[in-house]
Image 1: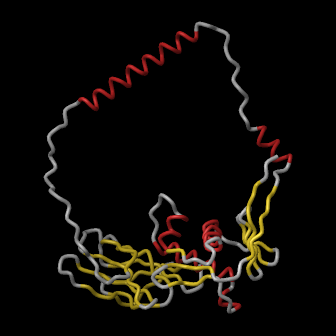
Image 2 (image 1 turned 30 degrees about the vertical axis):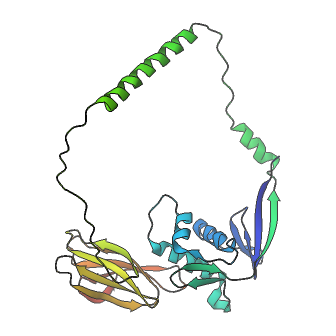
Length: 272
């Protein structure tokens, strides 16, 4: 029977089991999402080196476009699970403008597990039985003829596509022109109103996050939500473009709250 290899990393009162993808504290499993466990594994195995936010996002959500706030919420979830503020310990360090680094002392141990006979028997039970070969010789010519027909059909399709003369271009849009819409530097979670007149974005200033709006016609810019602690993410315009929805997540919390605020600011209204 083959063995499933992995490692157990010990730091503080915790054990991270990569073979089972679980985090334990004093022998008890700490409830975490699979992405949070994967993020913790990446940080622990980095050997104290800084992992950029981009590299973490690409590793956690490959072939998918996700907002940076997803990573921020995941790291916040890890810090709460590790009890950083509760015990005044430090496991995950935020390196400004770079990313995150695991700073606790880590002890690594190699482990291996062998599947039980029941697991092996169950796996073998689901292996499809081989199909018995037919002794009728007339099936071979029929199979060859069918393959020849498929080959001729594919050749005709390829010839039609490749040999067909290109049709004259009717695209009159001209060359693409790129326009810079923000110049604040640390901007994320951008959204455009349904009529294309306004741009809303989250601006990070000195570790605090606020919500801003820019008029794309007049270039006027104003602050809708002052900078605050915690995470501000996911801004979206209402259909009439006169209000904004956004989500906030308090520091060291996994609970998010949905708010609505007017296009020109005002008192936010809690929705959920």
